[in-house]
Structure formats: structure tokens, C-alpha cells
Length: 484
Image 1 (cartoon, one colour):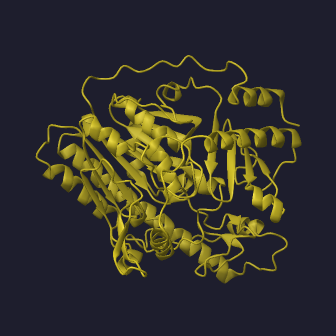
Image 2 (tube, helix red, strand yellow; image 1 turned 180 degrees about the horizontal axis):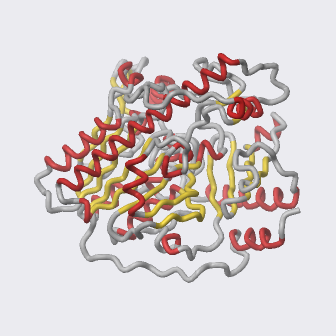
């Protein structure tokens, strides 16, 4: 039975009582700081040194952000790039599985540009830029633009090509291109907002620093993967399959290490150019990666490249911790030093947080709120609820402990897929669902109300043509996404 205090915390999170702490706004300097916003595609928090990983994958980040604030329980709003980035860049939740920004949205690029910032981006994921394709019907070139370059004076995106599958732009190249833009701009006295979107940990796993971490092998680790395979599966995790998992995991960690090396170069540049004292650096991710921690869901086909098909190695259709627990750290003017925050926060809180730190106006459309204003920087925040959304389900996490996964209605009706409730303190890997019907009902009702509030909110300003949809589908397929 769930403790009474948990129900009281749930009531607070649902707005049924007065539970807020005495949060106060921080006084900000009159000058506007620079902002470097680093997003690493497909990076799990628990595979970083910041997140306590057993391998020292991010020593530079651990050292640099030890001088800032680390949020230990940050969650992405979705488990794949487009919707996650759309919500992160606008500070508001949205239904639907695309990431196209609406005409009514004001992404961070536009907000900083309108405030007098120079704005630039270097992006290694071509999904986030404009791409062109021949329309098979009209034989004319068409463009698909999700809108992330709105407000950006400079937008450098790696083009989709076969070379992209070889990680043509590694993290160090993204950093090099970004700092070159800053140094080449004539208006160097104006503050800048620079978005760097790194792609290294995303498949295919071809690390620039291969050989850094040898694959691990132990009976205990093998048993953990075996335990994730459903009893109904007639599959035996033999030694070859287990070695494959460990080899691919080591490659993933080496790609994370490559990100850390590039981040070390970024901070060295900030120091050498005298910008370190007046620059806020944000480090986060759009989502995590499965890495065989949970079973492949019955209505989701495994990728052909996955040599252990009963286990899920990808992202986009699940909302377990390995999919949504992301690193989040800030350092710079206005950010407390040496602080580690254990309260749950969401990636949609990033935009309003930066706006407050830089004295920019912000009116959230839904749940996104400044972490400064909410008291997260000083530990005075109220009980939290954190939502995540994907095409197959929605999840709600209360106070970082109780998480409910509520499947989409069609999956519950047609596939007999049931809600899953987990106690993250007792079961952080989310392997043993709890049969507490009262809490399941209460949290399910909250998710339904939240979804209804989004359905009655702003709607998309028009849609894509069939040709545009075909171009988008082709790009998704080329990047390795299946039925997102």
C-alpha cells in the first residue's frame, strides 16, 4: 500500500493544495550573457560521469560543471528528436509525433534574436534543418523545413548523405564550426546564442575514439539482460549475443567520450578568448537510448541491425528511464556553483530558465517554467510532476519516484496493453510493475486531463503536402528511424 504522504504529495502535484516553497527570483546583471546551448543526440544520463557511470566517459564535463549546477533527475519530454526538440525550444508540451514548429511558436532562436543577440547553430542531425527532394509527381525540388532555423542568422546543418551514416561531422567538428562562426562575426561586442547539436552517440556506432573502453563481460551483467527478455520469448541469450551487446555498449560509451573531448576544447576556447566569465553553457540531450535494457514491445518491429531482437536497442517508442533520463547541467553567470539538484525537472523548463537568466520575457503556453523562478536552484521547489509523450504512450512521474506509463487508447483496446506503474526508488530499471489500482487510477486520470488540455490548446497551422510527407519519411528511413 502506498504511504499517505505519497498521496499528499500527489495531491500537491495535481494542484489540490498549497504546497509551493518560498521561491524567490535571483537578481540578474544588467548585461546579457552569451549562451552556448549544447544538445547531444541520443545521450543517456546514466552513461555519463555526471550521472555516476562506472566508466569515466565525461571527465571534462564532470570537472567543468562541478563549478555550476547539475540536475540529476532531468527528463526529456519525448524519446525521439523532433518532438523532443520542438518542446525544448518552445518551452511547451504538444501532442502529435512530429516536430514541426507552428507559426505561433517562438523558438529560442527567435527569442534571443529579438533581444539583440547574434544567433547561430551548427547541427549534425539533418532532421532539424531544411532538406530538399525531387517530387516524383512534379519533378520539381521541394523543401521540408521543421522551423528550427527560425531566428538563426547562421544555421549550418550536416547534409543527409551516405557519408552521414559514417558520422562525417563528429563532435569536434561541430564545436570547430561553432566557434569559427562566433570568431568571424564582426559584431563581437553583441552577445551571442549558439546552439550546437552533436550526433555522436546516435547509431551507427562508429566512435572517433575507438579502443578507449574495452567491452565488459560478467555473469551479473549477462543475467541483467537475460532478465529483461520476456518469458514468452523463445530466445536464448547466448555468449555471442551477449558479447555483441557489450561490444556495442562500449562503442556507445566511446562516442560519449568523444563528445566530452570536444566539450573540453569548447571550454578551452572560452578561456583563451576571455569569454568564460560571461557565457552560460548548457549541456543536455534530446533523449536517451534503449541499449537492450527492456523488451521490444510486441507491436514494434525490431531493426534488422539489432542482433538481439527481443530486446530494444533504439529510441522513440518507449518512455522508460533509459529513454528519457537525460543529462542537464548549466554553468555561468547567474547559475549557482557546485550545486546538485535532485528534484525532477523537464527539458521544457530549459527555455524559460535561459530567458530568466538572460532577462528575456517568456510566457509559457503550458507547463514549462523557469528553474530559477520555480526554486529549483535553491532547493525550495514544490512536489513535481513530469510528463513525457511519444506515439505509443504517455508517462507521468510524481516526485521522481512514482512513474505511470499509460498506453495510447488504441493499444489498450486492440493490443490489450495495460498501464504500468513503477516505484523508481525500489525499481530504478522499471522491471517490476506495481499493482496499486488506486494510484494507477489517480495518475491515469491526471494524464487524461493533461492530454485534454493539450488537445484544446493551439493546433498546427496547416499541414504538409503528400510530397513533403514523403520527403520527411525518406529522411527518417535514411536516419534509421522506423515508424516513429
